[in-house]
Length: 286
Image 1 (spheres, rainbow, N blue to C red):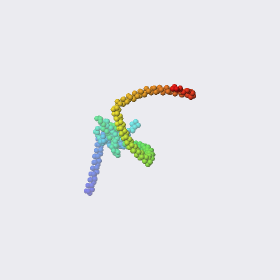
Image 2 (cartoon, one colour; image 1 turned 60 degrees about the vertical axis):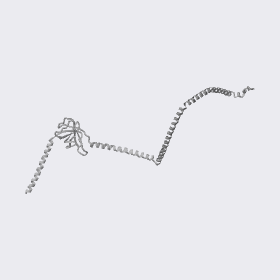
Image 3 (spheres, helix red, strand yellow; image 1 turned 90 degrees about the vertical axis):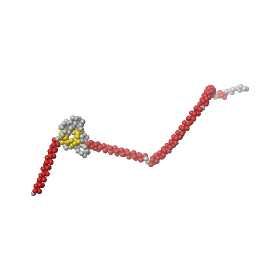
C-alpha cells in the first residue's frame, strides 16, 4: 500500500512539473511576442512566402513573418506582409527589403538591406521593397525558350551534318589514290624545281658579281684611256663631217641621173623605136 502511494506521488509530481514547464513556455512566448516591433512590406509576387518564414537584417535573423494579406488597389493586387522584428532594432529609412532564397532547397526569407540614413523607421511603418527575380520562374522561362530553340537547332544541325557529309564525299573523291599519287609527284617536282631555282639564283648572283667586276674594269679602262677616246671621237667627228659633205655631191649626181633615167623611160614609153632608129654618136677620134 505504501509502495502504491509512493508511485502515485511520483506520477503527480511529474505531471505537476510538466504543467509548470508548459506555463513557463507560454509565458516566455507571450513575453517574446510582446517584445517585438511590427513593420510592413508589400510585394507583387510572394511565391514561396508564407507565415513564419525568417526575417533577416543583412543576413542576421531579427524576426519572422506573422501574416501575408492581399491588398487590391486600382484593380492591381499586391501582398502586404507583417514583419515581427526584435524590439528596439534600428532600421534606417532608406533600407530596402527583398525576398531571398539563401540556398536552392531552402525556404525563402525576407532580407532587409541596411541603408545609410541616420533617421530610423518607426514601428508600424512600411519598409521599401525591391522586387527580386524568382529563380524558378526564370528557370521555367529558360526551359520554355530551350524547348523552342532545341528543335530548330536540331534541324540546323541536321542540315549542317548533311553538308559536312557531302563535303566529306568530295574530299574523298579529291583524295583518291590516283590524285594522291599525282600530288606526291607534283610535290617531288616542286622540290626538284626549288633546288633548280636555288642553283639558278646562285648562278645569277655569280653573274651579278661578274658584271659588277666588268663594270668596274670598264670604268677603270675609260678612266685610263679617256684622252685616247676623246681623240678618237674627234677624228670620227671629222670623218663624219667629210663624208657628209661628199654625200651632198653624191646625192646631187644621183638626182641628176634619176632625172635622165626618167626622161629615157618616158621616151621609150612614148616611142620604143626611137632607140633603134637613133644614130650612134660619131667617133670623134676618126
